[in-house]
View (cartoon, rainbow, N blue to C red):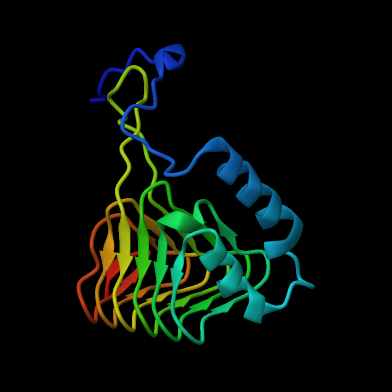
Length: 178
């Protein structure tokens, strides 16, 4: 039996509980820098971490961020040492994303801290932080959803969706943990 549909009224959406963390001018400046410089193939990878730091991110040493990587709000990003972020990755950090040291986020991966309360008639936010523990790997085109911790040495396999915590050392694939 199908549950009754929610009487959705998006015009009443308030966005309650979501704080972008910076004023409109800083948001606009980041949006311009992100799209005009940061994501471009010609912008040297060695300059991406300092640029993120200039906008409030905490970024460790020897961090490699490839081109076409999108970061929603750098001031809500913490990255450890020796981290790789592959091209076309998207860090949708409405809430904080913490990436520990020796983590690989592969090509096209999505880390999304945002969601909505599906039973809310006004579809209010239901956001939560993401944490990638030391030595974890989010493989190509995988997705980590709001509130998830990927444990130390764990893997979110290519194309998989992690909608709940992945314990340390576990390999999570589209068919579940392996």
